[in-house]
Structures are given as C-alpha cells and as structure tokens.
Image (cartoon, rainbow, N blue to C red; front, side):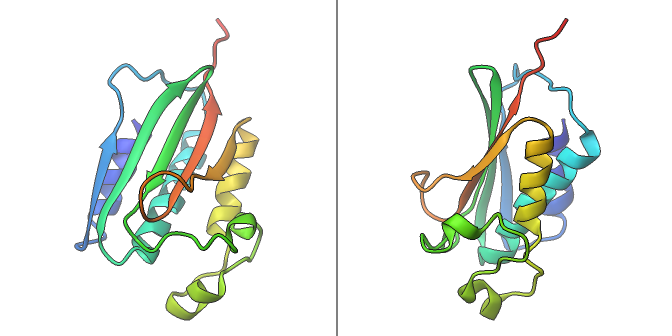
Length: 144
C-alpha cells in the first residue's frame, strides 16, 4: 500500500518524529495514479516533518460513504486560522512559516491539484487534536 511505503521511506529521513499509520486491513484499493498519490502523501508528511519540531505524525485512512478519507496529523503548532483559507494557494507561505523554514509554497498547492485531478477534495481539519491535520478524500471506484 502506498501509504505504508511512504511512511517507511520518510521515517528514514527523520530521527525526531515517529511516523505511524492507522489503516484498516479491509480498506478498499482505489484506482489512482500511484506516482501522484505517492507524491501527495509525501508532500503532506514532509510538511509535518518540516513544521512540527518533533513527535508523532499519524497517517490514517477510513471509508466514508463512497470515499476513502486520508488524514495526516502532527503534534506541531498547527495552522494559524488566519492562514487556513490560503494554504492551498500557489506560492502561499504564512508569515510565521517564512521565518522558520525554507520553501516555495507549492507543496499544498500541488497536493490539492493531485487530489482534485482524482475527483477528490482536500481540507484542513481544525477539530482533530492538536497540531495540523490535513485530510483528503478520494472516490472509491465502484465500476465493475
């Protein structure tokens, strides 16, 4: 499964984070561009590594109706509510992030483009614990 492979690969790039996955064994396989989904999950986990100083990064997946919902959450400072409406825009970097880390402001923009090209949507979940939590949904292919 792509999620597990990304988690294992990125775990080798950080010694201050624990990347864990919570994925039901019976989660359906979706028809998608594996390279782009790998890039999508890598972008979200890399953001968590970059902006959360240490701690756990969780990648979870669940079925909700005709969609699979995947969330990447961390134990960092979270996303400022003033920045939330803009984080998926091209080249957007919050003033706080610009001071703390390097980046071009393309990671979440590309994540959104990948999700939408697969017929899904992406959002920030402000209710899910502390830190940042970014979720996306992808449709389950029910065609026979």
